[in-house]
Image: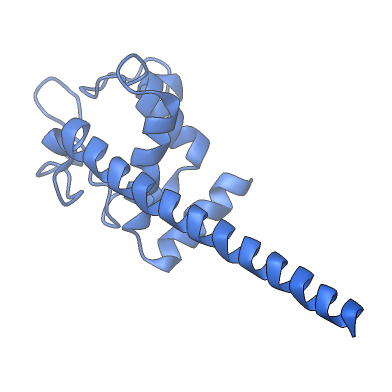
Length: 142
């Protein structure tokens, strides 16, 4: 009878540890999501919009030949890029993946830590429907 009790206690401890780990991960994810949104609002929303809508006529070149800031919602093309590409564009600028391309977007490598850039990107991705998230996840896994 004692071994059954010890096994039950051991199983209970494993279950409690699993629940605690899940809650810790969930709480961290919620905090990260909030920080990502705050960082997005402070650093990205002035150009890309508070609702990720981008600038008007974002596919039409301005007189200087540059494109306005694209939306990060599903009407844009952000979800077509892998995590590595989006991270690199954010950190080092679009010319990091398209040499010679001129953009009004500043680089954020000197302003945000890598973890903060990731939090912003995770926030943006959290706003996409399942279909776009799945497509983008597949691109990232290639």
